[in-house]
Length: 162
Image (cartoon, helix red, strand yellow):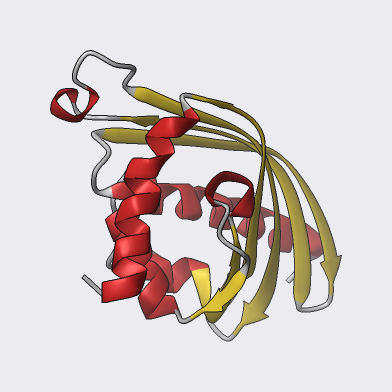
């Protein structure tokens, strides 16, 4: 494979990563996107310390965190990729929008916006590139209080497994 092929595969990996949440595709896509285990750092939006997590647990956290939203849309662009053999780092811009269903929003705002950067790491596996570390650094949020819906659901899953 050439460096160009690797870069294209890594950019596509980010598209699949966004599809997990935006298409609520929690069954088939995670195994095509992540290593097992993987390291997560969403501390800039959740306040939860970075941690290594088994893939099965993360799938449950994703499901619990994204199912409450009526829709989400993640735009990931401006990929800067550094290749080092079978390892890569990928820096990218992200704009993530999350909309609450009307019954949860009531008369309040219904959209949580997160703008920032991903600084992720990937490894080449026998089945292609997989993200081994995901780090989100939020630089701006609107209606950040709405994040509690996702964080609360994901935290409950992490604690109870349900």
